[in-house]
Image 1 (cartoon, one colour):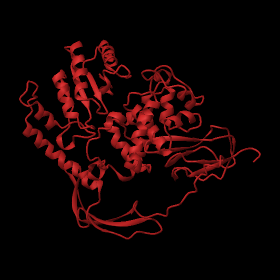
Image 2 (cartoon, one colour):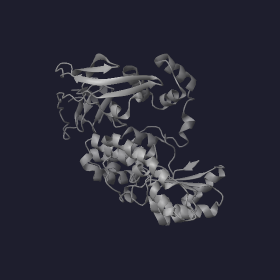
Image 3 (cartoon, helix red, strand yellow):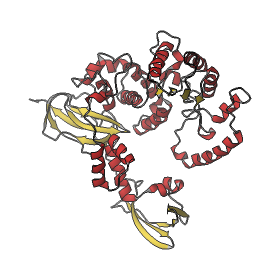
Image 4 (cartoon, one colour):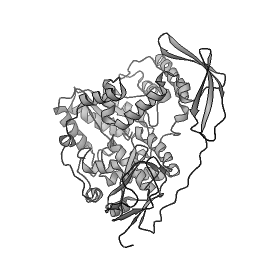
Length: 480
């Protein structure tokens, strides 16, 4: 069993919400549950060496026989020093990463930790030559995925302030770029810090870290700060994850919910004050298995679990497999990029069944269909297939922007795709009624009516992409 522990650098500050007393008390509760291992998870990499010595030393003194396992991220660049400090203070295991995949938002370098402990009583005794030999494979593999590098160039000691978890930081950089906020990365990190404070300084680990990230990007997109969010909470269309957090669907945060922000943001929605699972209907996994089988044929336990958590994503995945087949059999290079003309490569479908493929030619782009004819050889036989060219230039339809001075005009709060449209032209709505649902980089947001009236000049349909402040519709008040 693990405890999700962060903000380990303020252990001696009595003003801090998460201090040494908090962690020792939490450990005591976990030990009472008869855990086998105590996991200290420093998800943001804010555990400094001195704090590591203090925390692990205190835990070891109180529980001399309890195995302690420490996990961290090297975002600030102090990961090796902190893990060595944990080892010296009594930790039984620390997480590291193979050298070519280590550092920054990953774990500290295994080679560096081994070198730091070499010759000491804590020397793990691993053969460094074997470790390096294994790393050679990973260093070559990383080159294949170089187009997906996050763009980090060194440590970020600012993590001690914004506290973005290592696994989330790179995701947020990509999300910010896709949302048109790439040039505002510094503002996004600052907004993350403010969003965390607005939410009550919560433990940031999936899914709560996503709540903080969604709120931060929402704030940057809409030019909001700490004070303006507080002042306008009853009018803002917060991301869905933020509302779910305030409802209590992610549990009760340590120290409680921030008020009056919670009440103002929910605007009459339910508030749970107990474990959210108590309010859920029993989940029929057997029926889900039958539904998947009737819809897609073969079904595994993994399919059932995937569908239970992400039904739409699972259905999209199975549609993709149905159309293109199991692409996991492709060599990594050809999964990520096309082969060169005349290049031959092998695909092993199963043991003893190999396809020999060669790309022969790619035809011109059809202006009417956006497709190309592709000619290739399969086991010596020439074949032809028509494919969509997703990179082909398409006409960019410019959308009108909502006029902030006209209260009847409703604009998109941020860039995204319209996944659900809940109104029609001429329909009547009340203040707060949902108009549409936007989705952007795993973040969903409901656009609601700013006042009662009749919907007119509806500009969107389901599947449309919109930019921030694009006009969605007008809500005309009665008598206007």
